[in-house]
Length: 415
Image (cartoon, rainbow, N blue to C red):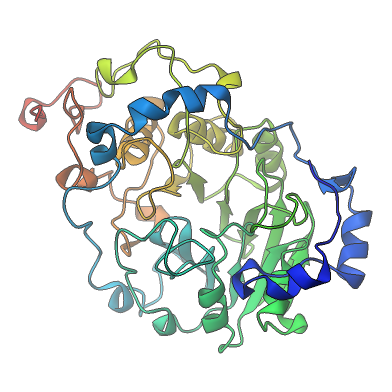
């Protein structure tokens, strides 16, 4: 990890605005007092590597082949729910409604309050308009149409979670921003008034519009380029109105702390769990296995960076948060919108759906912009199969009957 040194002043002045600003003054002093700061950097609750291993370099030739590249993007346009604004114009019958806006952006309506997690409406998750991962589906609604927001919650300062143009558009409202410690330096630099910032260390809480928001630990890293990493904190978030409880993982690798978060703040009506943009290196070719069926392709945890979860780890994290038993609803996030990893585009959603079914856990599979209430969550619908490249061995049979056997009418045909 790097130290807390500052860039030379000339380089600071030349740095593009989307890079944000470094913590200084009272904010920096608070960072230095944090129990999660050591040896010049924020530290993870469990050790984690955030750089590729040699195995990733060895895997590049296979990952760059035509057939591998083709599977990393959909064949046809991604379906976006057409009536989002009309659907959220009336209050949620159960008092809790979630709308996945793509990637990690989720609108949570909890009670009569509106919380927007990790809003990214930009065309690219990058500091530059001409380069970087580009959005592969349109946003379901114009940002300006999302009225009545009470709080915007940011998990960390990576570009696919903290987008300067989106933040600047939100400044025009009177919304409050809840962010991890140090991230407020970026928002203030972009024009967010300090009085509209709630900047939290892990396990700190704040009250906004009758909601309690708590920053909880995560296993990740930070940084927006041309600076040492680990200078701002990353977090997962718990939000409750006293009746409903929800959890947003942000970006994180799996770690035992999920059980602790669940014990203190759970169980949850719904969790929003990162299940995409992982990079795992299987001991054998996983495409040889039958989709949806158990296999012995167990990855060696020492073979890939520890800062994102696979779908199976995401399910495990949800169960930990629920006290070790199925409960609530798991909403998969951090997939589908930007091409950030070498796995097939639809694989995160597919694997989450199948693993959840096997565990007896309710998972949600809304289309982008499709609101749903966890209390009446529809059964999973593998809509991505209609637009994705079909796996070599075809799709797993879906749905399955309660005993787990296939329903013949749903058998997938290999392309």
